[in-house]
Length: 279
Image 1 (cartoon, rainbow, N blue to C red):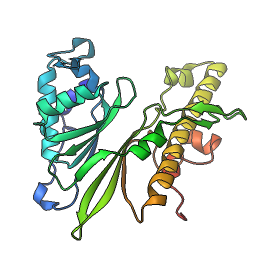
Image 2 (cartoon, rainbow, N blue to C red):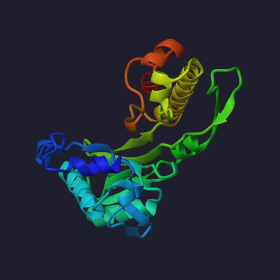
Image 3 (tube, rainbow, N blue to C red):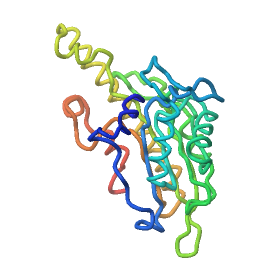
Image 4 (tube, helix red, strand yellow):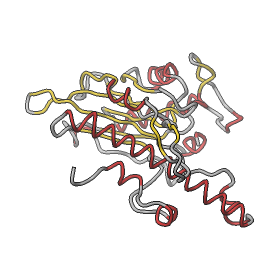
């Protein structure tokens, strides 16, 4: 959570944020960063005010924490920054970047997701030029689709728990401007409330409910990864030759099969998102 971010900057923390390569060692490539800053909405009183502290969430000095987050981003020096668990309003994300990122970025996203929203920030006057909302992808991703979440034969209407953010921009390659597409993603969580207790100490019925809820969550993750892949295929790949695409964020899944996927599903969701190698 956000209070854990506060600990990341403490001098005696062995897990404190590392020093990154100097920019000149990577130029002129696009430098990309994705960071789940965690519960950024806890930093704000409202759309115009950053809190001094949020003791309810164990944040004792919000401006100092935000300053250090800004310094870490400045050191990383990304041309493109995907932020996960950003604040609930685009106005708040813009306030943060004006205050702690020296107004160096254009902000996109914050479409939905309650108090954990996804943003893509593009550095102004960088190698990434002419950024804009990728409207065709955004329209595709905003539409509900049908999926069997519980594994029954009944198809139900489903939407992303947090709609991905899609941005189209351009980069110069061999003196020619070429499109590049960025997708910021925060897929449905695997979390089951009281899941550990249900599994370790629960009755047989509670263990069965934990398994059922875990499978439902993974089916939701699969549904969202599959829908995003369909968007990439139909909106990007079929309309562009050898397109440049970066998809980043928190997929709440990794390569390979976990216990529930191995025993109750036929695939893992990241491979579903990656797509068919024969495409």
